[in-house]
Image (cartoon, rainbow over all chains, first blue to last red; front, top):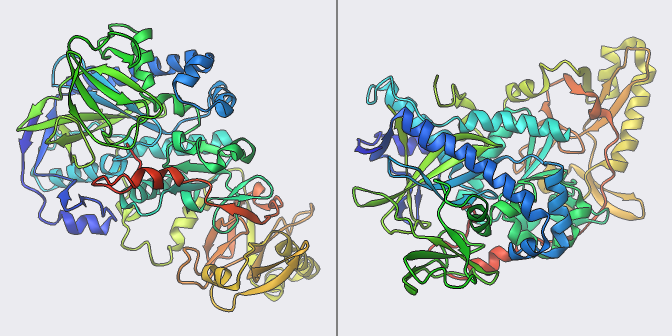
Amino acid sequence: MLRIPINERPDWRRRAGEFGFHFHTMYGEPYWDERAYYQFTLQQIEKDLEDPTAELQQMCMSVIDTVVADEELLAKFGIPELHWQAVADSWRRRDPSLYSRLDLVYTGKGPAKLLENNADTPTSLYESGFWQWLWLEELVDTGKLSKGADQFNSVQEKLVNRFADIAHHYQSEQWHFACCKDTEEDRGTVQYLQDCAKEAGLSDRFVYIEDIGLADTGAFTDLEDLPIESLFKLYPWEFMLREEFAKHIDEAQVNWLEPIWKSILSNKALLVMLWRAFPNHPNLLPAYFADEAGKTDHGQWVKKPIFSREGANISVIKNGSETYATDGPYGEEGFIVQQYCALPRFADNHTLIGSWLIGDEPAGISIREDSSPITQDLSRYLPHIIL
Amino acid sequence: MSKRTSSINLSRMRKAFALKPISAGVAAVVLSGCGDRQEAFIYSSVDECVNDNPEYATQCQSAYQQALEEARRTGPKYNSEYDCEYEFGANQCRVQDVGGGSFWMPMMAGFMIGNLVSNRSYYYQPMYTSYSRYSPLRYRWMMADGRDYGDLRTRKVRVREDAFKPKPAVNRTIKRGGFGSSVRAKSSWGSSRSSGWGG
């Protein structure tokens, strides 16, 4: 695993405009950064990232079996009681999932460690599935990178196939796609998923989360009063289950992506349950509920809210006292602690690997760098190759 | 074996053209190539249907009438002329009394007819189009459920049988805004980033 500087494609910003990739620069800071790339060996990709990703996914699935059968755990996971049955039913039916991203700490050797599972609303999908793919194509075509260079990235191919399978599963070809208003990045991610769905032969309509309506028939509707049969929502279940329309979710009978059982995976309590079920597994870090006594008295720990995004409300605890904290609006549903595991540093950057699953299959990686030790919303995205 | 997506059709990933009416080719891919689909025709008038099928003039006439009835039942409904015109274009909507309420609805722009020449009875569906520059379905055939059937020149389409299933009657949306309140609450926290809930 190497970080190798390289010249940017001179016209990449124009090219980005052409393909509708508008969030490559955010808040005046670069987000997509092709002034360097990461290089892996095939062995590193397959043995250290791909295989463990598949295994971690299976381990996560076995945790769901435990949680849906245990009311105390469902409560600990912060899932409102009104929806316990829906979560269990959705899991029992094995409602298909579209995608997830496991965040891994990996230094280039030794086992990758699972930091968290973004199972419900992962982003950076377009940059991974399409844009870094195009970067490699163009660098190989112009002779800047070897023809032998490959990439761990079958995200787009697998997404298209997965949409076709899911549409077949539900016998539903008409899909709605939703995200919140006023976020170019989320809208771009959802547009990419619409593009993939279209490639799979599905029809796609867009509606903003805030515009979803409730009809007198009990169905959810779009702005044209069309009933929503099947919906991809880039909006977390933990929010939806606490909002006004939560009580109408069952009756609306929507085919959801992600399915509601993902509310168990996209939850940091999962990390605690994984460590309980698979103690000392090489790809796991020790993790406990923060209210379990005495766990953080020695060593360095990261305290995270069970619901948290973009690195918010995280603190570092060293031998029992807090040394670093980020601000944020989360935490009312409880916290977990996870053993601190420093991100590897490459040229003064802290580097985090996102490992994609489409359905249950490992499908590729994305790499983000941050100047701070906790990856936040201003991290940069860098492409990678296998050589 | 390569570890990456083998090929991507770049012309279909390009967004600079997305604002123009989508070319007929996109719909053709969606609508062809599957065994369990059947042929259907879209006509913008009874005359067109009769010209194409002189021996079925009666069926053309009655399919048109039945499609009109179906349009009344299942057509998109709006509470205001403005909303309807925003989607379908100026002068494309009129007010209709349906089931005790009064709504603005787009006028039927044509009808789809399937199975016309077989011995079994034919199928029909009302078809709509949009002339609004705000609509992705401008100059395209769509069904009441918003499904896209290609541009207005399209006559012959291959459709699944379920395209002819009666559409669920659309009732009034009684409330909006029941999702999305958390995002407003959390984003008021003034992070460097005001929105976006991906992880």
